[in-house]
Length: 570
Image (cartoon, rainbow, N blue to C red; front, side, top):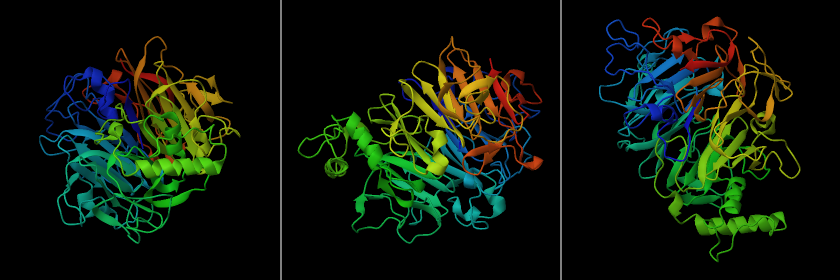
């Protein structure tokens, strides 16, 4: 899972796209750097003998990449690269070593990628044969490669029908639906663990992949080798799937946006309501997690929106949700239900249409970003308020960014600590980054390989400016509240942030890019970053582009377990 985000108040392409916007002369996907780019490669590896540049590809991390130990990069011209652990294929049919330079995914001439995403079962590096990738081109085509959980059926669950393991190592286009028709042009993609999500331009969500969990499928459905429409919804989380009718069914909706998560996901419908589902999902009101098999209204998230945007959400009689005026929990739930009853069959003008590949929604819809970590969820409003809550306390507390208090329980949406507004959020396997509207970047969560704040910490503050080379996660190093990332200059605004499983990047307004966190550490069991026990699983994610050369066009990799904040592009 990785996240790369363009910030500010203008619309943005993709996180990777956003990272390069200020530097690219072309419209569309952008990256984190400002060096020369080249198109028309004749070899999948950038540094071919026949085609060189002085500075290497202007590539930046994509918007969401939770592949446990790989790294996916995108250039302004739409070229896609994969580095690190590529044991299920590099998109070209090969399985290069994890410490070789990133390779360019070989796509047909003229295909220009605007977003891409990777994921691994349990986000766990030892699960080497369950990593799969998904990419979206500027014509609405979807491309996949790799394997999901449930081998040997894994190749058959990436949306391309009955293909071999060898064929799954090369990128191929998803063309057919489960109903036998052609997959429509797609506007936006998202991932959950072993599942694929694609939102078309008409607001229909298409889903496919492993059916044991997370898949928003009809009741009784199993694995989904090909895309099927996922429009049905429920009133409360349920593990029984999406029924066409019944007491919990709320019928079908058209979607405005869909958002990735490790083992949960969410979407905003055109009615302006938030729906969530997945293995670690709750309704945001303190209820226990339910392995939700159908998009369900998230009561806690929707109440938070009703409270903050009364001009948009009302009952049929014009009544609004005012927490202080509703003195009992039953009264609050009743008012919530009345507003939902009025809103769910309507189209809210602010959320009309379909969000494209942008990393944040900078339009008028109240939800700027919706995101998830293992056992936790977060909602960033258009006003820059960041709300978080746990869906499973055993996993989620490190992602809250705030204490658990009686007036702001961990399992209900509440603002992160500090009176600060944010433009964008990015999350890895074990930590969270947020770009403040003050132009600084803040982190929290596990920090054993400096992934949260770029330096060693103890008790929530920076204790040393280096990194332990093989530290195991511990409560002592965990950062529980937003802390400014160490080593990033404060005299120039940060414009973009990016975060893979365990490595992070920030690009400044003057074009300089800094990175910190994992060198060879990878995702470990849902919510940790650790160095894999086997050297064969240790790949590189961070490259010093300042040291690019013909032999190594991406530059010099960080080869240790971790690095403190370092300048990687000048």
